[in-house]
Image (cartoon, rainbow over all chains, first blue to last red):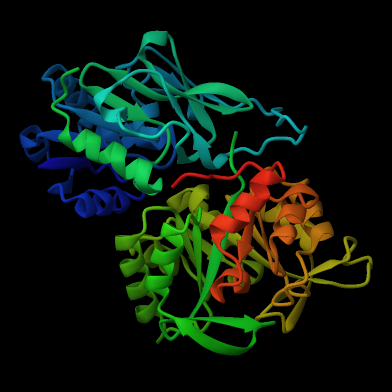
Length: 210
Length: 259
């Protein structure tokens, strides 16, 4: 069973629907008991870092997540579920989980496209991800595949080695990270058509070992 | 770089899709769930469902459509039409839509934008704008006026002002529909699109008037739109999404080519 962490973070049902479609039993839950029994954990997220951290703390999930990570349980972070893994976020000046070294920053106000257009914030829509290594979760995804993004903040890992993929939007930023049994993405694989489903399928088949 | 989005729009009436010409004389052209699935497979970047009947009795039919669509397509889709309250928004989002579009209700009660953004996040809240070109006046300095009720009621509100105000209130995106161009298939309202898109920081989806791929090229380049809504040109099989994307790509517009 795959646990989809429920911490009142927006559209959790879309992750569930994608896993249902792929045929992996899953459950939206915040019961520690149930989460501890799960084979894998998806840590989704839509919304603000501040509120997310508050909810995580209220539910005790801020303590459970590092525990699962140490226990070797495969974990997939999505969007804000990636961002709060870092030390801190500029969004609401939030102190985050500190599982990954680095910070989450707001896109610079003045970014321009190659044709000189002022780039919009949020970064919303489809963009390519260059995956840097042959990680089990990111394998078999055709080069140049695009994924659906919606965010105004981006992760800046302090350790380059954890960056598993990058995306260009005015700047080049880390859009996928991986560390041991943890993989996390800034985009929404559950809303990214076939390449996104492939990524989720990969994760659901992964035992957390590299 | 970010791709420009091509978004088929399905008007839904009594659980079936229709396409009206200037909002009149609708004809049935199919099952919205099947059409949604079809466009998903054909490379649509997003899909918009617009409930054009949208009375309270129609709501359960529409929610059922949303649920069935959400089970079959794995790209973002938004739902609009008759959304008046926070409850309406919640129903649509819980049924599986990514985004909910508010239009008339937001003009009448702008606070719904703020409430929606606060409750569900700005990324969920699309402001639908129906706009008509009018004489420049003190009240309407841009020469574009907000209209509601499918273009029948003039609101005395400047469209340019309203777009900025909605952004301030927390709208995450604007779907900008020109009533003058809608259904004509003679091209988008480029001037209006550029005016709004260059003056807000949130993405703008151009709507109304698409009849051939060249129209999309124009609105994405000259109109500075982030996305283009299409309907008749694909609903009747005149063009395919892939064909449109190939044309745009050959003309230097970045679009998503693999799906």
